[in-house]
Image 1 (tube, rainbow, N blue to C red):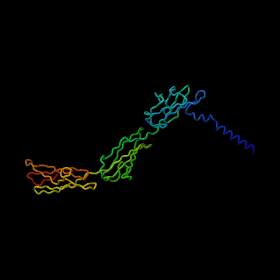
Image 2 (cartoon, rainbow, N blue to C red):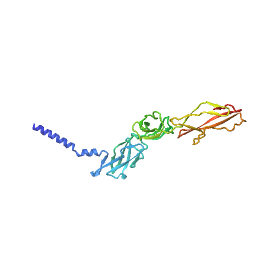
Image 3 (tube, rainbow, N blue to C red):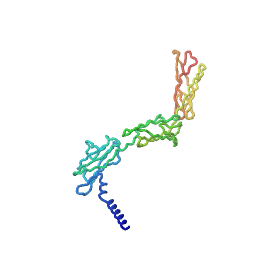
Image 4 (cartoon, rainbow, N blue to C red):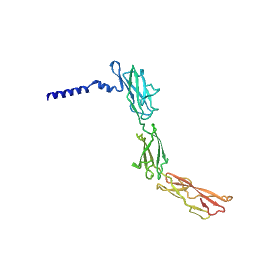
Length: 300
C-alpha cells in the first residue's frame, strides 16, 4: 500500500513539473513575433486597430525593434500585396472578409503579426424623401429613404411610426387618417442583412388644410341679377367664410358687371371668390357667359 502511494505522488509531481515548463508559456505568447538575438527579449508586431472595415486604414506597432529600419510585407488572404511596403495600409481596394497580416524583416529575423479580418460596414441613410412635402390633414405621409453600403450589400429599412406618441405602423407610410394638430414621427433604421446602421428620426406636425368647393350648376337670373351660391366645406371641420375678391376684413357678397360689350356675340366674365377658414385660403373663379341680347347667362 505504501508503494502505491509513492507511485501516485511521483506521477503528480511529474505532471506538475511538466505543466510549469516556462518554455511552453514563452512559445504561446510569441506566436505573433520572434525571439531577438542574444535572448534579450522578443520582437512583436501588431496590426492596429483590431476592428476594421472596408475603406478604413491600418497601421503597425513594433515592439523590441525599430520598424523604420525593417522591411514590411503586407499579406491579404495569405498572399503578398504588391507595392505595399510601408507601415500603413489603406483598405479601400479590399473587401469584407479579407484577412490581413503583416511581416517585418529585421536583423535577419522574420516577425509576423496576428491576422485580422475586415468586418462588415454598417449601412447609412443617404437621404429621405417625404411625400407629400406639405403636412396637411386628411391624407397620409410616406417616406422614401435611400441607403448606401460600403460593401455593396442590399440595404433594407425598418420603419417605426408614432402618432401623438402612440405606435402608428411599421411600413413606409403611416397608418390611419391624420387630422390637424397631430404630431407624427418616424424612425428609419437601415439594415444590410448583418448590421443595423444609424437611425434617422423625422418629425412632422399636421397643419391646416384648405377649404374645398363643391361644384354645382344651380343659379337664378331675373334679367338683371344673376344669383349663384358657391358651396364650400372645411376638411378639418373649421368654420368657412367667403367673399368676392381676396381674403380680408371686408366681406362682399355682390359682384356687379357694369357693362357688357354688345359688339361681341358672347361676352365672358370671371368673378373672383375667396374662401377662408381662419388660417388658409382658397381662391377660385366663377366664369359666367353673357349672351347678346342679354338673356339668362350660363355658369361654366
